[in-house]
Length: 59
Image (cartoon, one colour):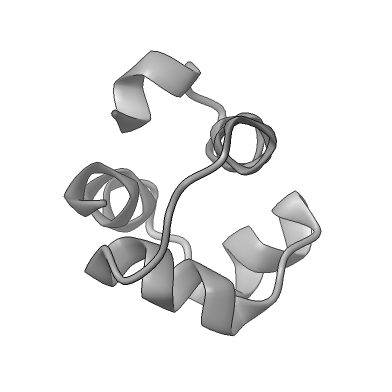
């Protein structure tokens, strides 16, 4: 999910910080950004909240 990485980098946050805010593992953020795993709705909602964006902005 290139948008996840782009939004994270735009906010200047590390994968670790986003993971902590979203209550996810840092490795999960990494594989999501690479598109190596499916993005489920609940995870999308957590990431959007952690990045302070709408879920649609991450798709």
